[in-house]
Image 1 (cartoon, helix red, strand yellow):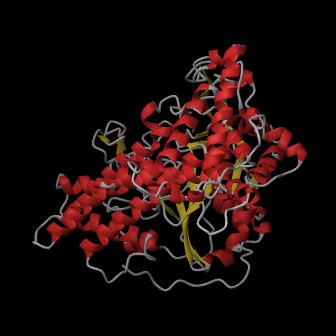
Image 2 (cartoon, helix red, strand yellow):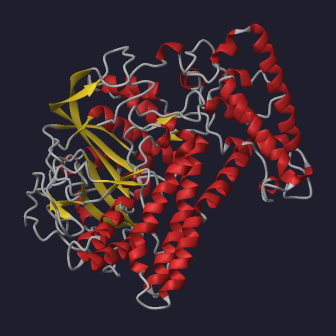
Image 3 (spheres, rainbow, N blue to C red):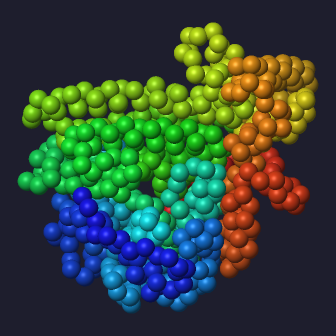
Length: 608
């Protein structure tokens, strides 16, 4: 698959006309349009889409859009002038009005269908037609592809209105969830975690929708009332928005022989994924079976690395279905996400997520999605000729190795968080040289659960390589509900407190012994404490986007005050830096006891 030669930009992009010159629609130009689609993009009622890779759709503009924020960091990376974010034509386009976009931009966007698997189980009940043909982008509408500085970006409106996949919903996103996603994407990028990016955020001055949400101070697991909330549109950007669920959809159509071109459409979308996400590592001249196997190997590497990074920074995706799993191997869809306060292996911010999508179960959830990915591409290796049998065996081997690769990524991640060289984990698990690392890590996890500790603060304090446990005690929680902590009753007993302090002190000495051992250096001369500390502080963030920071930001924004959003933008895009004393006092602290178990602060329903 080849695209027409993209144009390069060599100067600042200051206007929509400048941006329009860089338009390059690889998806619509190379993939199949739904043959039942309208010509003008007026296609907003729920319906079945039986074939084709996309449906042309006009977004529905929000009324009286008002600027809230844009990502200054990302604008700079793209070469966009900051002034453009508040220009009338930019606001029109990225609040959903495409009627007057300049050529060669097109006056309609597109939505895509995909299938759904939850933890490796196929579902069609979410489709109103009970066929799976009505499930897809219900409120996410892509409006532009552009090649900027030799990089292709797809720009997608979240909350852009109804599409054929809306399943009867209004296609809107509320200000609350839009702020969460807008801030989280740029925070994750600053943390060094692959992610979709945030471009802009606009709110309607006049339009509101009703959503279920929590009463102030509610301890309910699920929302207990309906409230009117402002609607907003955030624009997210990625090289593509291809998901495992999209490949699944076309593989299911092949499996059930749903139309004559099903296999052709599956092959085209897989080639398109390679073109959009893997062209730098998969040679275009390779035969198709070899491309498919190489795609699986590359995706395995990206996905395992991504999930290890999630756990490194304390992030829980919350709802890691196959339709929320980007084939490009980056974080996609910030709905019921959350960052750990108290370390809990089964931390889950979403009330509907269960243990299968909880914090430390994310490697297993990733494996389930990878299994569905492998099943989706396997039809392209059907052994209609003898040579394909070898490729099928290769794919089976890659799929079977996922847990081993994931395990290795996790060990490397933990070693990095603890400042340890990979030399201490490179040997086989049964090797005696690795036993000290396993023992230190295992005991640390037990201590983190039993104390309990704040995940971010603990590792940041460890990064200073303290002489005793007093700095670590900044991360210790007290007086929180028993079932929120893992063993909070121990923390209220002075004798057990003293015993726990002793265990922490013993662990600290074991860790420091391993830290400065000969096996923990790649050079002839040992690393100094200062060198190790500096390295660890590049791995362990000081600031994370906790939910109780977000709540006042979107509450104030609903009243027209956006200053806290701007403050969070500044702080959370410098998560590893030592910032001012004022910032540290406000954002580097334990979660207040009164916020535990509060709906919308400690847990939330699927954000919309």
